[in-house]
Length: 313
Image (cartoon, rainbow, N blue to C red):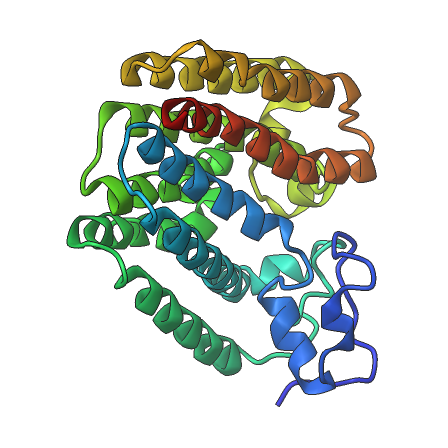
């Protein structure tokens, strides 16, 4: 059984006064293992699902089912992000113990055993499967196809300086699943939007990785933050600009009107502000800017939503 002390430790990036701190003592280590006290990851997994649904709606697919889909994807994003974090912590238990920011996580801290973590992981995956089975067969196949990406992700930092690219492939898969769930198949605009999400993730996860560059260099873990170093702001300009350009191309491929492109301006401004404020030597600054990508993702969502509204008027 986990070490259920009265006050469970938390990692520096956890939400202060999170509801997890008020949960039953025995449940806190498991909730922290699931990152329930760090909802930003759920948002970053969920928002691409909303993009896919909104894109389908703007093309006339989905109808009222989209509201039901939004609820399902919200639950699915929570449990699958929790499953991914649990799996990642099982694989990375030795690395996490050697990094200051992650040493207090439940597994390296001895609060949750490996066996208990695997049990939790299986339970979360079963809930995720139950959610996925609510969609059409095409969406189910697309969803299951992401398992190879998920399984390989924790190992990428051992073999390449681009684990953020693998995360981009994985975390934006929801675009394809959500679009397929609404439209019954995939289209060129959906694939382009998926590519846009890939570059968005490259940007925000590079910022996130700058929190750990010193520890990562010492223990031999690779990241784009280490690869780019002081040139990171230039790479951010490239990644975020490419994301906006691909959103634009997706709109052109779908035949969207002027309002779609106009609605991309707030997201572009947000990205410019992120780059302007970025200080890669300040871990707190990197964390704040990383978390601000929830707002960036929601601002990108404005474009297909605006097109949907215009088409309904």
